[in-house]
Structures are given as structure tokens and as C-alpha cells.
Length: 343
Image (tube, rainbow, N blue to C red; front, side, top):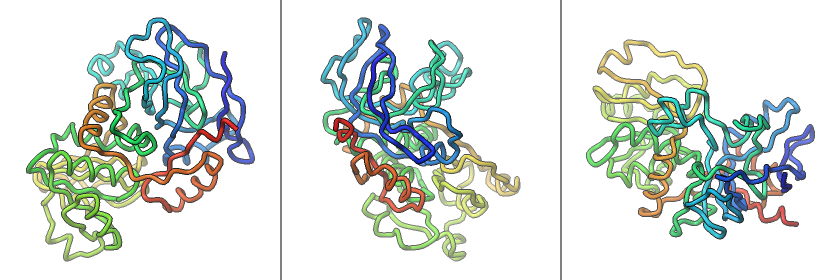
């Protein structure tokens, strides 16, 4: 085994702790983690922590430091990115169809998962090193700032997947509900894909932010007149709101044969079938992305210069970042600089 330092969950919060990484298998890549995004999933995992081994972090960028003997796509010094999935069975219908995120045996998650070979608990990217299979490691385009690119590997792929599955492009009317870590990237992607984009918000306060991101306008969902005027307007609505909410007003603005993709809150929803029936509307969801779509997203971002809007903080400020994230006090994603773990 090899040892690095990571931010491990304890009864007193996250503490820098020596953690073990496996010795490299033939198809493994060792990555020096430079930047790791702070995701709502990390917050949920920490709030639910019951004393088990937990190091959060599943959207990170860094540099290859060592490769196993069977690795062919990477060499030491290469900039890379790693997301929230680090393995899958590789043989089910989903994996063979480039949808490892829906692996029939469930994909191995970057943290809190179970290694498919030795059964150990996976420990995440709030650490200075990560060891990962070559197949789940992605080249980071040289044109992208590595800190601002880190959230692409979770927040980004979470919204990229439904946008591509729903064939968003020129002429598509897209609405994005919620302008947070997921939502601001959904706006950037949809605009770059050629769609006309509108942000949906409970207040008009984010109109200027929406415009800076490329949206054509902002619709205030608490304004009945605005909702009525937008009835059956949007071909695709990406709902990134990270809390339980009523879907009725959002379905009301979805066009005939349109789709509401619900990706922000993963809890139970109740839907009146009439809200779907009146317009043959569809309600869907999506989680992460397979290897092919993740690679395609990064290539697209490199071509179009798309990264997240981030606030980069030293990893020793992780507690403050998590507290502020819980209050939605960030525009739009915290990213940890892990270089201070060298100290």
C-alpha cells in the first residue's frame, strides 16, 4: 500500500489524516490531486456519516505521477480529470452501451464505494493522491483551467447527459430551473449547443447572472402572469433545484412532447398525471454519465472554453466551504486547492 494525506471524516469534522491507497495494478494511474470540487453530495454524505471510513470528493483534476505497466493512454506529467465513477462491471448491457453510470451491478463510486477487487472502501478526492483505473481517467484539455474544470466531472456531466440525450441544439427552447452549481453549467452548455435558454427562478435577483451566463431571459416562477405567458413554451426543462419542490408550475411551461429532466433533488416526487397528459409531457431524470459522454463533454468544454464559475479555497478551509455551501453562499462551486496538504 501507499500512503497519502486526506481529509477524513471524524466526530469532530474533517481532519487531515494519513490514508492508504492501493499499490498500482497493471491498468492503474496514480494522480496527484490538485483541485477537488465541493459537491452537495459531499455535504449529504458527511451529514449522514455514522463513524465509518469516509473521505469525500468526487470531481477532481490533477497530474499523473505514475502508471501501471498496462497503461497506454497516460504518462507521468499528463493533466487529467476524474469523476464520481471509478469502475463498473464492464459486461452488462449498460456498460457495453457506454452507460457505465447505470451499471447493472452498480458502478464503483469514487468514495463510499466498494473496490471490485479487494472489497475495500473507496476514499475520495479530498486528498493529495488518488489511484484509479486508466479507463475512468480522462485527459484534461490544455485550454481549461484545472481548478475551474474540476466541477465538470460531477456537476457538469450531470447536466450534460440529459442535454445530449434530449438532443438539445439550435432551435431548442431550454429552461433551467435553479442557478447553482448544476444550473449555471446547464445554462453554459445549452447556450454553447445553440439553444435559446431561459432561467427559472423564484425571484428576479439572478437576472444579471443569468444574462452573463448567456441566457436570453429569466422567468420568475412566483409570478403567475409570467408563468401563464410561458405555458407550453420549453422543449426541455432541466430542473437542478436541490430541495423538494412542487413540479406542477414547471411542468406547466413544458411544451407539447417536451421533457422535464429532474436532476437536482433525488427524493420522492408526486405528480398529477393530468400535468403530463395535457401535452404528452415527459418526466425524466439522469445521473452522472458514462465514459464516452464524459470524454465528449470534456472535449466540448475544451473547444468552447467552458468551465465552472468557482471560488478556490485552500483545503484547510473545507469546513468553512461546507458550511457556506449548506447556506447556498457560493457562486457557483467551491473548489479545494489540495496543495496545502504538502505541509
